[in-house]
Image 1 (tube, rainbow, N blue to C red):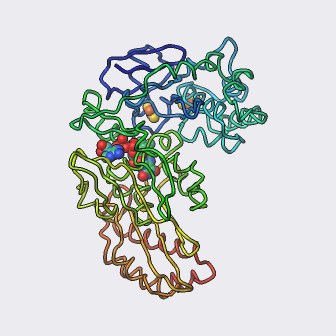
Image 2 (spheres, rainbow, N blue to C red):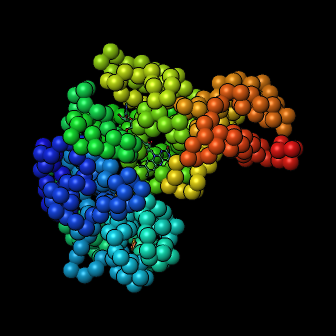
Image 3 (tube, protein in one colour):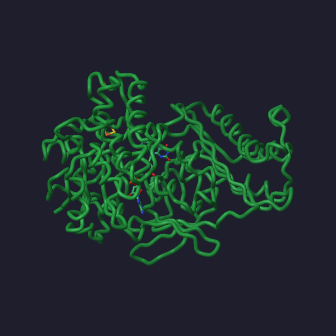
Length: 467
Ligand SMILES: Cc1cc2nc3c(=O)[nH]c(=O)nc-3n(C[C@H](O)[C@H](O)[C@H](O)COP(=O)(O)OP(=O)(O)OC[C@H]3O[C@@H](n4cnc5c(N)ncnc54)[C@H](O)[C@@H]3O)c2cc1C
Ligand code: FES
Ligand code: FES
């Protein structure tokens, strides 16, 4: 039995735990405001808010209900567009009306839900962050300018939001209905998700890969959701190690002050990964284990020379992330082993890190080719290098030979050009929908240039590099 609050109502569902929340909402609870578009996380028509108790507050995140397992919402508050209705239009609904932000209306519930989520968050909102909150919502007919104007109006109205009590403030100012004020106490009365021991079940975290790849089998399969497992959460620094729980999401990485300090460009890099609702769901371990050759988080953590921690029926072990991949979707991992954490040595003042991604669209698109690099410097010399590349091999590729070649070399045009020759020997891209093999080789070469041009603009000359 899964218990959660759906808008203002307690739901106790005995549906299979692999059922997606979208189907529970529409077909079991008959709330049809949440729409079905793609069922693949791409359109945002099915967006709901998921609220959970954290440090005596209810924190809400937007998620695509088409990929969200029922098992993952035990003890949570799910908000659909119906749960935002009041006697009068809410501030967000009114802004959409005033700016003509809707035509056929199919996408509108998703936009309203996403924008309402940013209203009740403790984050400070300006027009840029308001627009960012709807980066997972697609509209096919209105045109985005009117929706962006509506978002800017909402952001203006949030100027005086009380960051200490955003929900109380939002209730008082007509953003969400009054029942939101009582949700914290009602969630306390609900049991959190019980740890699941069933190792024959399919492990699901955010579901953003599984429900796309195995949509039909997931609904009736036994699942074990690790999405809310506190033992797999958290980001901490211990000595010279940064340790991140396997169930940390891309959004958790973006929000973590520890990581912001270590990687000032991390937010810029992670904004290239999926969209706000998918970043709120997709986890690190899910990215590693789905073993997509173009996984962005995997490319980043390969270049950080990370070690993953695995826990299964035979005990616990550490494994270099680069050694996890044995062949296309073949892993050095038994089915019952969980990735509990990933660790890497924290960068110091001699470390340089950079990530690059090329995709057909800048946002909400998977990579054609991606790459990351971590360099440890000793003066002008590269003491140690770790280079990764995605989209150029059947696995997310740690470039062993290129990394070894760079060690001990000075930072110069000659080094970069010679390293590219080594790199070309150890990649094997194939032609597919994302480009020909030759094109991908060219892309990786350009990304490799970009790493060095970004990190050492004063030491390299682009004309000489490319010539
Ligand atoms: C619209 C959309 C856009 C996307 N864009 C990007 C993108 O730009 N870049 C990118 O890299 N990816 C992208 N993805 C893919 C996906 O979001 C990521 O790969 C995400 O990190 C997967 O994590 P998850 O928690 O959702 O995995 P799940 O789907 O829950 O699981 C994936 C696999 O990992 C296993 N697994 C999960 N957690 C564990 C664990 N702790 N231990 C052992 N096994 C585990 C599952 O059993 C399954 O085999 C996108 C997906 C969608 C739907
Ligand atoms: S239906 Fe398109 S994102 Fe869920
Ligand atoms: S209003 Fe028709 S799809 Fe957005």
